[in-house]
Image (cartoon, rainbow, N blue to C red; front, top):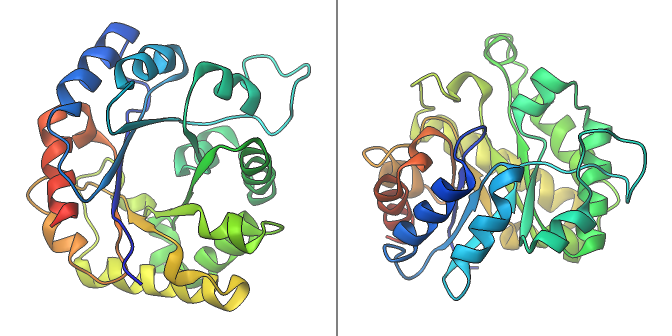
Length: 249
């Protein structure tokens, strides 16, 4: 099955509302055919990005959400609030959320279930740390995160989920997994999804970890890599467009 590549830019804690709108306007005119694209602004810039993205090919995803519909959760945002802001989807389980904010596999799964139930598209991020890779625990970590993250989802919901493999040791470090290492991890993840849900050929698996315009094509040429979740390079519209072009082939 031919999977349409997907490139998403995770801006993390960058860009004000005016900066987000200006980026989307600049980027929208550079999006090539044959690839899906999205940006993930901070909460305060979501509405501005959504407005700028109207009548363009650019989707807008939030960087996180809470699993409850509403309640006494100071500082959190629900799926319903994201829908009200007009976003298309949400990024769940990023390693920085797991590392710095104590997110667990179970909590990530609760968010995935809630997001799908609300009708949001989902990017589920997984990946091992440098210590886990050095201890030969990569496959154990990935199996735990993938199985837990997709637990309880229907086959249709799993097929609609994008999985982002981001080796933690390559995020923001300038280090990039070799195409061979990245492909091996993607193939392992696809095998897990097939064994548990039977829809692996429909699931897009992105690579993330210091992807740049000059290394994107080599990574995206691998058969199980279906685009990228881009960090630092996504802050420049020309760079993100170049990476999207690499994914489009």
